[in-house]
Image 1 (tube, helix red, strand yellow):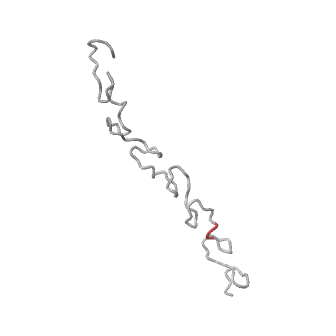
Image 2: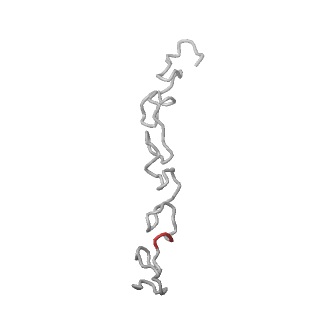
Image 3: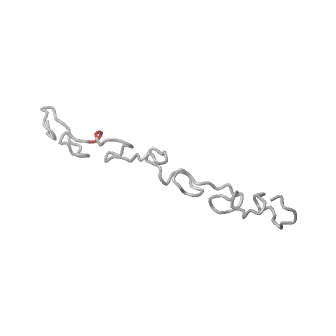
Amino acid sequence: DGEPNSGKEDDACGVCGGDGTTCAGCDGVVNSGAKVDACGVCKGDGMTCAGCDGVANSGRVKDACGVCGGDNSTCIGCDQVIGSGKALDACLVCGGDN
């Protein structure tokens, strides 16, 4: 602090008269290096808020067909029902047996 005999000492972070918080990680431990991840989690890996694509905060989810970021179109049957498995037969009848 530049004051002779002020009684102030350097804290664990090397700050004169400090309280040790300037170099503390998000866990409150001095010099731990712990940081908040993209999801806002201390010492996290960025996966708690990751979409199905593995990207933090992407918002991507699997559709009813299990496709990441899909639009349900890959598993719609000819009856327009997701996952019905119905297809057009040789006579173009949805779910027919020809």
